[in-house]
Length: 252
Image (cartoon, rainbow, N blue to C red; front, top):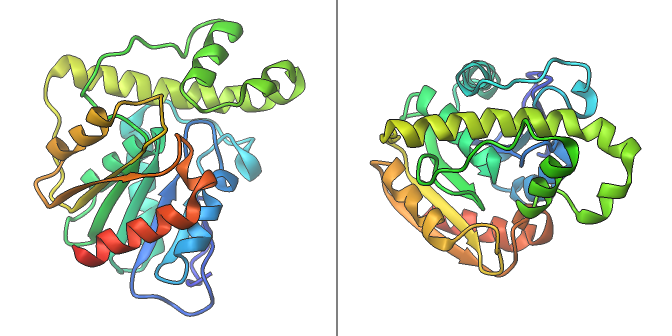
């Protein structure tokens, strides 16, 4: 990795040399580093690229999960500031990870945040959805499949579901409660950083208008990108997504 700072929160995909800017990528609900690593590898020629590993998954399976957005964002922001070593950062979030990336951006000095990039997730506070995280397993996992987080073929694998369901439920509680509170409050605090929102043209889980609604969450420049592909752009189209993000940030 491009920094000698060790952290259980971040897994590097960069070369040995220290780059001028660090990128931190937040995966979708219930996911770990594996889900976001293809994109990090594609961006590693431009940034010190790090996948964010949240508690309750992969090597952190035994760590207590986080279900309160403010608490999680506080912890990640503090870890990230130490890890970045004073360099400017790009925050990227995919699907539910977009909401976490946004909240982390709110906690950082805008001077340090070169850009916030989000994909495949409605702007927080832009729509109301009743929480599903407390539903019984069949109903809850049906919603997870509908949201594009879980292939339906995995529903028959009870052993695997026993492993991944706790992190999924925790992330759903984290994001659903947070976004419902924002919607009911009727106001969201924008960040003063350039923001890029990405939508897959074949993504049937979220309307393009909900992606465009991220424009209201920044006082900086905003750009929306529409790419070929469905919901899971970081895994299915990492080359195209990386090229689009790199170009958008270069143009400012």
